Amino acid sequence: MTIETLMREEIMEGGLEGEAPRTIQWSSVFAGALAAGAMSFILLSFGVAIGLGVSSASPTWRDTSAALALLSGLYLIIQAVISFGFGGYIAGRTTRPAPALATIEDDSERRDGLHGLTSWALAVLFGAALLALLGASAVDRSPMRSSASNTSAAEPLLSYELDKLFRAPRRPPNTDLREPRAEAGRILMTSSSHSGITSDDRTYLVQQVAALTGLAAPDSEKRVDALIAESRTAINRARRNSIIVAFSVAAATLIGAVVAWAAAAAGGRHRDGAPLPNWMASSNRFHRNPRAMPVP
Image 1 (cartoon, one colour):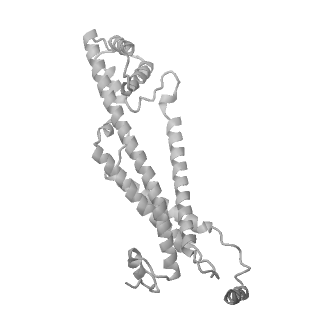
Image 2 (tube, helix red, strand yellow):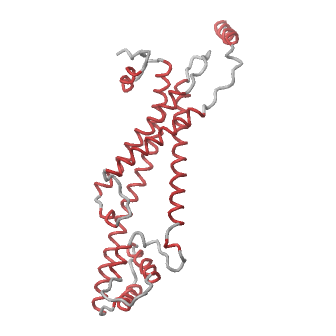
Image 3 (cartoon, helix red, strand yellow):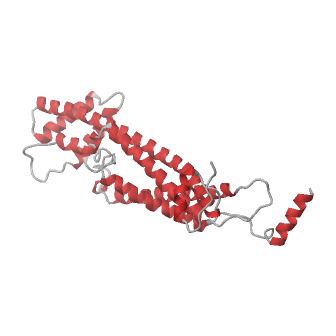
């Protein structure tokens, strides 16, 4: 009891008792979030440049193998570890140290980790907002939004199959195929369902192909059956790649939170001159005053 009273008196004499309560230092949080976002942009651009992407405007991206999709997902996780680790370290390193406390438990590491976690959350929100804005802008400028009757969600996914479905050596000039393509696309999207395309829809597609291409009925049936099979394969591959990407993004985000916390705690230890973990030992040579190294 006497020791606690003396420690409290020393703190009051030093002026720490009257200081403002410890809060989040948003300048460090923003610095960490910006650093994480910049590093993520660089690494993602590099990944796209070397072909580690499972989405593209080209129809051939649907033919990517599962191995390439998994490799792309693994790269997403790796870049998240590097980016959020870098941003978390910046957040922890630039945070002002907490005042000395008259408590047995030292929560400086927890405080630095919270700064890294907050910078991670801010970077994730900024990235999600940017993707939402870009997606909304791309949809609003799309020429397929000219009217509701001639639009179809299948057009970007099955555009190549629709081209082959209505391909004709001779066609009257000024023929508008937007509405037939949209309707055929909506029908082909049902090919991946459990029941598949119904017989009525198949018959209607055969009639449309025969009327717009001039093919005979047997040739129209062969083309429609072949395109139904190709559409089913394309949709299944696109669904598989979307699942891999979604799982990889979720895993990378969650792992990034853990890495941001650990990196911010390490940055705080580097700032305070505390013994560093082994994986931070190499950073000691870049500091003016050598930090204490852990004793084996």
